Image 1 (cartoon, one colour):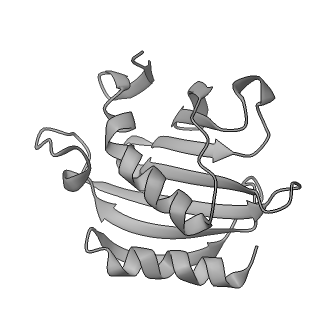
Image 2 (cartoon, helix red, strand yellow):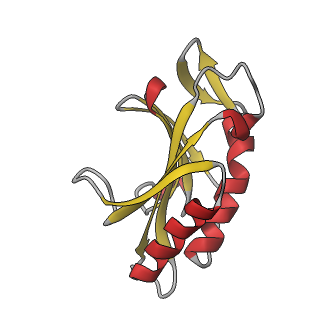
Length: 154
């Protein structure tokens, strides 16, 4: 993955007033890819819902050259640490039964649900902006049982 993409993603977080901080980090051993760009934010802009029970969140984005030419594998994750909740688009080849891209819902260390997602391809910046734009709608489909995510509405 070219370092220029990492810098570009950091700059995109930095110039978006919805994000308080932006940073680059190397991935943990359990994570795919080699890096994440992390933007820390508040949740109030994402759903425009004052009753939404979490206030702090972050988006973690990472890209890796795939084996097919100019395609990228990527991870775009919305994380709410207070609730141990993660929702993310993954194009990583881990679940071929779901197609090239899937969306995954985690509660704590457990995967709650996965479903096929419409692939978004192109430059990492275009993928980042597309997924950021889609985020409010997909968060609105999460089904909750109290403070636990239990799946997606159809």
